[in-house]
Image (cartoon, rainbow over all chains, first blue to last red):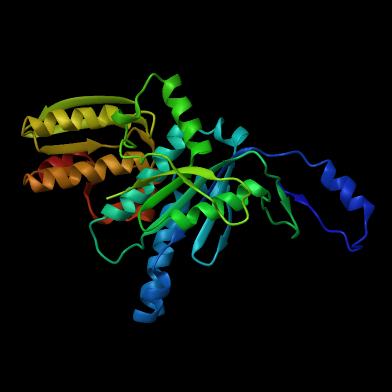
Length: 216
Length: 109
C-alpha cells in the first residue's frame, strides 16, 4: 500500500523526514490508452461507446492478474504498475518477457476479435522504473511517483493504435529473460519488434532509447 | 500443462490439463499446427481440467479458430469450469466458439 503523504503545514519538516525515509519501489509501469474513444463519442450514443469502453476495460484489466496492479484510470487510460516483488511471485507470468507477451496477446486479441464494434483499440507504453516511489497524496488511494513514471507517460507519444512502445531499459530486461531461458526473440510472438530509436522527450534531460511492437 | 489426445469418430479430442499461459502456450500451438497441417481440422478441446487461461492462451485459441474455420473445419470447446467460463465471458470469447457441456454433447452435434 502507498505511503500516504498529507501534511497541512507547507513548511513542515516532518514531511521532509517522512519523504526521505520512503524507499524506492522498482518495477514495471505501463499505460494502456483506449484510442479513438472521443471520436466515437461524437459519432455514437452512450449505449454504444459506453458498452465498448466497458468491454475494453474489462478485457484489459480482468485477465492476466492485471486487476491487482491497476493503479488508476484517468479517462480512457489505465495506469498499471507491477513492483518487481509482485512480478516474481505471479503464476501466469513471472518475468519481464512473459509480462510483455501477455500484454502483446491482450492487444492482439482485441485487434483480432472477430465480432466488429465490440471493443476499442488501444496503445501501450511500458518502462522499467527504478526512480519511483509508492506514494499517494489521497487517503486510501494507491499511486506511484517518480521520473520513471513520467517517462512511461512520455513514451506514449510514440504509440499509436495497436502499438506497444517500450523503453530500451525495459526491453533489456526482456532480452535478459530470453537469454536465461536460452530462447531467441525470433522464435517468440515478439519477433516483429522494431530496431532501437532515440528521442528527446520533454522534460527528460537525456535522450531515451525505445522500441515498438505493432500488432496486426 | 498436460495435453492428451485421442480420436473419437472424426474428431481429435484434446484434453488440456493445468494452466495455459505464456509459459506453455507453444505446446498447444505446436499440436494444433501439426493437426491442421495434416488436415485434421475437426478438433474438440476438453477444458474440464484447465485451471487457468491467460491472454496468451486465448490468443492461440483465436488464431486456430480462424485457421480451422477457413479450412471449413470445426474447433469446439467443452466442459468449462466456472472460472474458465468467466474468463471466456469477460473476454467475449464465449460468443465466438462452439461450446458444449461435455464431450458427449460435442461429439453428438
